[in-house]
Length: 186
Ligand code: CA
Image (cartoon, rainbow, N blue to C red; front, side, top):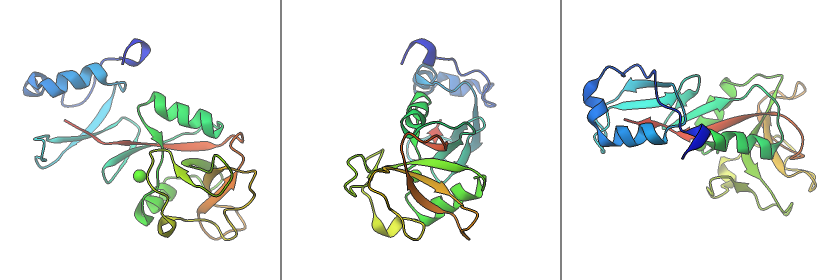
C-alpha cells in the first residue's frame, strides 16, 4: 500500500524492544501497516513464533479479531468502504458468542450495519468475506428477514423488543456500523 495509507507505526508500547525491530516480518509489517497505534498483549509463542497479539488503538478485541464501533452514520456501502480503508471489513458474525460480544458494546439507541446483505433481493444472503450464510448462526428479530426491497442488515435493540437482533433495512439508510479485522500477531 502507498500514499496516505502508508503511515509509520510510531507508538506501539513495545517500541523499545530492539529485538522486534530486527524481525523482517516486523519491518514488512511497518511498511504495510495503516494504523499508527497498536495495543498489544503478550501471548504464548504461537505457531509462527509470534509473541504479541495486537489491535489498533481504540478497537476492541474478541477471540482472534479486532472490532471498530463507528459513531457516525453512513449507508451500508459507505460503511463497508470505511472499513476497507482501515484494512478491515464490515463485521461477519460467526457465532452466538460473537453476537453477544458485539451487542455488549453497542448503544441500544443506535443501529449498526453488519457485513450481511442480499444484493439481488432474492433471499441469497451474503457475508462480505464470503463466509457461507449459516441459518443456525443467525439472530433475526421475529418476522425478519422481511421486505424484498430492503437488502442490508443492521443489529439493533428496538424499544418494543426485549432483545438485540438482526433487521433488514434499506442499504442507503444511514446507520452506525462495526468493522472487523484479524488480530495482528508480532
Ligand atoms: Ca467474525
